[in-house]
Length: 296
Image (cartoon, rainbow, N blue to C red; front, side, top):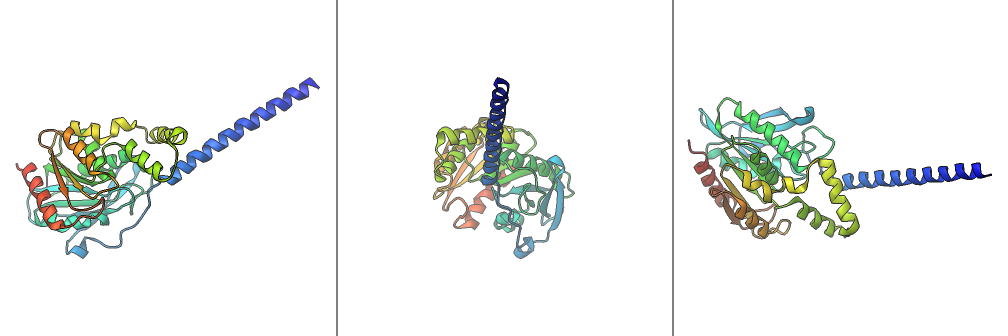
């Protein structure tokens, strides 16, 4: 009967739409799963480097709390301070090689885990803008601490944390300095390199994945790209980059430097994306930059 045929057609259409919807939902879940940040907890503390510290929990966005180590300055008085942020899948421990030399130079330090990293609270997803939100909250917390000069607070970040430091600093005018270690120039370039290593064709899958990621994080890549945000940073910026870095080619650091304000500096060092040779000498140059930027 015609009526039965119509019902049969509607049911088939419904099942087709349901199947498409389920496929898209599974595909989106697979994208988010494949891009999730590894969660690795710290195995040591600043005490390993002979530093006294306080373990903290600092409030951030979405009601989440961040795990942190606060290392007071070695001398009493209003000291300069730095918030130090790891990269994607890292934690506070990965940045600890910076702690002892920066502390000896007179800085109060806050090493912390971004949301969904290390021992911080889990959130729905991780992203570079969420790293920047965490930096905003941490910088505000640091400025209120006894023994910290609120006019001399700076940010130090590595990789995604470095990009986040530039994004956070581009929105503020109360920071004294930013040290960006191994920052990339544009998140879309990073994503396309990653998809290429997975042998995902850009058309149509890669293009769709990039659009979906922007939808999830709530930002266009162009709006948060360090290549665009660094020009809006008002404080001095030091770009540190390893000349053997194959994860983020050194040309990206050079492109960022060209977009800096006049107080921006580029420090090319021996090493790769995560490992640097002759750390003491390199940190010495970083400390010189920070000391100059934080003069009162």
